[in-house]
Length: 134
Ligand SMILES: [Zn+2]
Image (cartoon, rainbow, N blue to C red):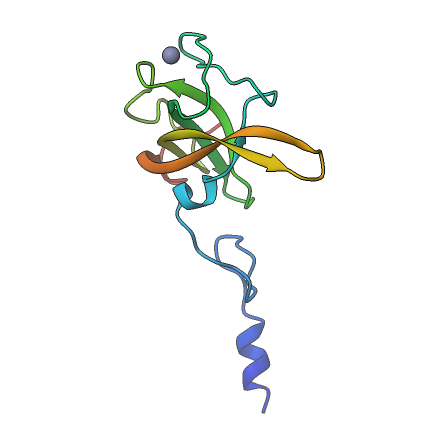
């Protein structure tokens, strides 16, 4: 009789939440619409310091520690400065380089707008099993 329950309570794999709302999505899908830049009107290339504007082609470095579900976008690059691979990958962390364009997302609660990533394509990926210990 308890067959159903035994199935539902199996241990989660990879620390991922084991519930029915979990959806496996690609990094570029998860990062689409992700706000970037410290202010509503500002994002800069970390390589050359050039200001990045809406509709500009940009590349973003993002990472996700193995025990979390949230991606963190920590670096933005212009087309000229974008690296072609993940430099010095870190063990236990999924790291990606994605390329796309800057768009704008409305933040209703804050009643403001932020630049965000759109039209993304994956350029490079480093799985958690690759790299040096942090
Ligand atoms: Zn640049």
